[in-house]
Image 1 (cartoon, rainbow, N blue to C red):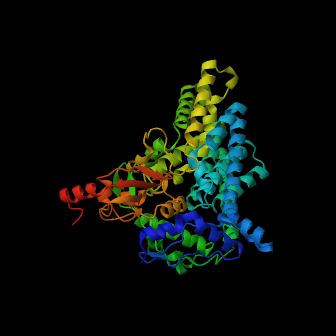
Image 2 (cartoon, rainbow, N blue to C red):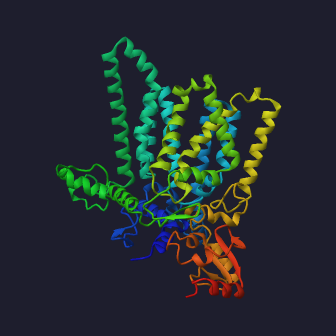
Amino acid sequence: MESSSSLLSTFLVSGKVYFTYGVNVLNGDSNRIMTRHQVDGAPLGGSVMPITALNAVPYKLGEYFSDGQALSLIQSSLIARTISILLSVLIAVMVFSWSRSMYGASAALVSLLLYLFDPNLIAHSQIIGTDMYAWGTTLLVFFCSWKFAKDRTWKNGLLWALALGISSLAKYTTVILIPLSMLSIFIYDLPQFIQNYKDRPAASVKNMFGKYLGYLGLSVAVSILLINIGFLFNRSFMRFGEYEFYSHLLQGIQTRLPWLDNVPVPVPFPYMEGFDLTYYYSEEGLAFGNTYLLGELRDGTEGFDGYYIIVSFFKMPIAAQLIAAGAFYAYLSNRERRKKFFTDEVFLLLPISFFFLYFNFLFSINIGIRYYLVLFPLLYVFCGSLFNGWASFSKTQKITSAALIVFLVASTLSYFPNFIPYFNEFLPDRKMAYKILADSNIDYGQSEYKLKTFMAERPEAILNPTAPTAGMVIAGVNNLVGVFDGPEPHAWLRENFEPDDTIAYTYLVYEISQEEIDTLCQTTDYCK
């Protein structure tokens, strides 16, 4: 069995697994890849989704180029990642459009700037993976829910259902969007339903039930259709009993409900296989390593309550936090603004509240802010509400607003081009980020090239030594704190020395003298 470290690096570096799967889908093969890798007998590869075929489109088009130079360019990883960047730009346009529709042009500009200069969104918009697709399709679903709620045409209803279906091809967690978006529309309808109920109780309940049953049928039918299309109808309608599940959840269902064995599953085999594997690794804490927060290391199955609150405190720009706090304060303290909840803000505040509670108190995979980014575009649209009525702002308010935007831009660009390990100014010394967070908050495999360049220029440097070593020592943050192999191997370094420099804020550089090592060996047991 391979180590967790090598398995994780296989998945993280450059998004290769997601890109390769996207190429395979375009070539007509939706079977999950990399099943040769095992953790506790179960194959890896459950998180790849067909939506990454979009990144592989230029590669596929490259097959039609005979010129070697043109082929090399169009099939490069840069072009594949450019697809993610362009799609993120479209998401930014949606943020601007929705904010302008609800709060006006000035508010929309602020929402747009918050999105464009969020270092976490910038970082993960450049990676081939599913995180950006998850936050983009989530925003799309609630934007379409809002439009459909206001104008119940077949066109808007179909666009809403299509948005839900597309989100199902982005990430498994987006399955929650079907009930969540329906709930937001129901809350929108609630005042009218209450009024109708007073006049005609039985008829209003019957009409509401029939209407929402139709919404549910449409959303589920379109989602199942798009899932089948995305996975190329690969072994759709296999009987439930024919599956060999790894997760305790699905194994338990097979055991307790044997009558389901002959029921055809209306989605493709690789979709169910991926859900099973993803849930299995979440249950067992496998393939993610240990979880780490504020110097404390825990087993991968045990998360930290409020993890993403703390992560956001350090990794979300301070200016964005202040604007968000101001938006919530202004909204909750103003009765006139609160009146719009049923018609507008429910489509923002309901998913924001759900994701806030879910990720902080029910979600056990605490490995990076990238999971939590799903609520950021929604939050930034809502932040625009603080700037509704810009023309009536005082000079002081306008200067303060401008200063916050300048602070936002300056803070974010100070990390250029290394946005993944971004920490805001609550961390005064960037070398000390490892004392707060680790994993994909700092290292998502993005700096391996810079490490190799540094090591080539400084061949005397020693990478991740597990025994006390003098000279130039380089330590990856995840190795240092024990995400992969536990805290013991690098305890000698972590507990006795502090870094002198960093490589792209991802790898820590130590200059350790022989005298310091001799003293360490004489006073501790690390050298035995």
